[in-house]
Length: 261
Image (cartoon, rainbow, N blue to C red):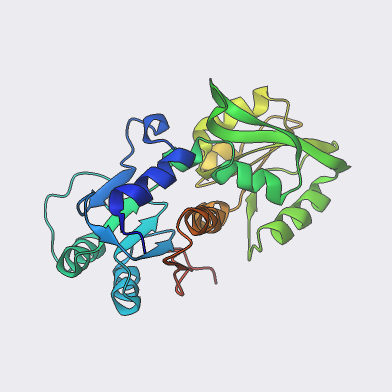
């Protein structure tokens, strides 16, 4: 049986989501472990929590792959009282490599925002904030049939299995074109309006952004809810490239730190 290294798994992910396209502020890539370490099993999740590392140890995974980076900004202390510090300590102690495909997976058309558009059945899907060569943040496309605002709310809730969502004032015109960006997408609101969309989906929208112009509506569907499909995408990618070893999706997939009551 062929032996694979961490660098082989990273190369497969980067063939889909190149590190060269990630945002300058991001920390996609390998953050814990050696590229030359052997890999026999990979565990995939959205967030590298201490619980996810415990699960990796329990199932014998040598490597963790997530969307959100475990180490996002500089760490001044690594201690067990901090969830990030605890996850780092557990991973290092167990010799588990940790890799993240964050904005590298956000900025490819088949990544996070593209998956959102496909889930809604949009047609003529394009990159919203294009950097050329099919790369950029967000997507925009056309609905198969026009919808009212009320119909769009019900449709989006069903598509993304939402307990709740937040919207701006509902539009009183037909919605035919929809823009979206997985995760925090407030920075692309102007791009969404310029694209001709009547509806924009993203997460982490602040109060003042909900004051929208006539004919344009924002839906905040949640950060976690907009990005969770990337786990299935990464799973399919690694299963295809490494059919001889175990690739698992975490059993504790719901890592959303936000609770709804």
